[in-house]
Image (cartoon, rainbow, N blue to C red; front, side):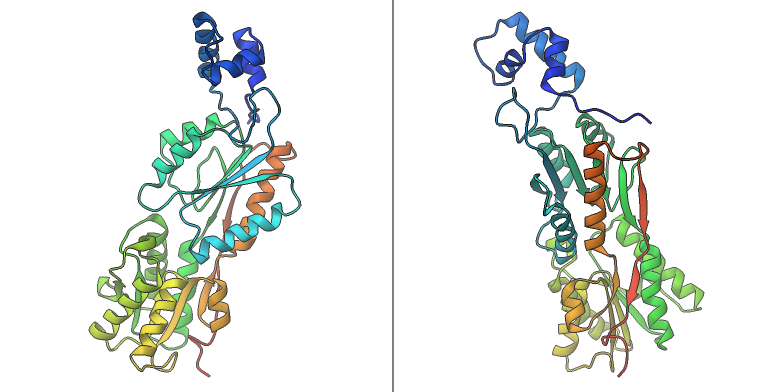
Length: 339
């Protein structure tokens, strides 16, 4: 696989047979260019799929290096840990860090708008399901792209074995003697949630335990696609009301587990004496208050993904895309362990 080189203003100028200042005038809609020349430059831009660097103060001079992170939200602790890893690796780099908040309603459209704003030297793309249009646009960057949470054969990627992570949580609870286990999920569906549910089902089947849709609960709060403290609190209230026989709860995120923790305590129940609790993500809050959780090593992934992009930017790398699958690990704490 050949490494793609970035298309620059010099390439456009050479193909169109004009100076770089003329290309700059065309890109800035100057009136000081004849129509035939303008058409020739625009045709060269289209043929080369050139995207001007968004950090450049002038198209005619070398731009500063820019590194972008496109992520569903900056307010979730899960994503904050990833960003901390990115910042840690960039702390001594002379690179502009750009952040794109994709949101949860229409992340693909937001990403397309961001990419239309200009090129960057590197892009870390988190939690976006790629369609053909996005793949084509990413390829026009002619810059390294690293995916986090998804995979595509054309790009470097970091993803997780979510089945193994969820199975570890359920196996932990079964090993403690729990037979009536409920799960807290999001009201939305997605590959991540589906993989974790399947991992939980597999662990239950291996232990000859029953598991059905009646064991799955979600809250009504829609913010953060249902991965919030409020949604976890609401789901736990439903479990306490509809399934009083449940002795253990596995939440698909730590923020949901934190909400469930409050609902359990507000109901006058004890953790883990009455109900054991396990979350997912292993955010710092869970570590401090003692919630058992599945660690995805987000800080480490942020560092490694950033390092890979930096290597790609300098050309010091293997040419074939790298695909790394992280196996999460269970961190057992007092929310599930008696005594």
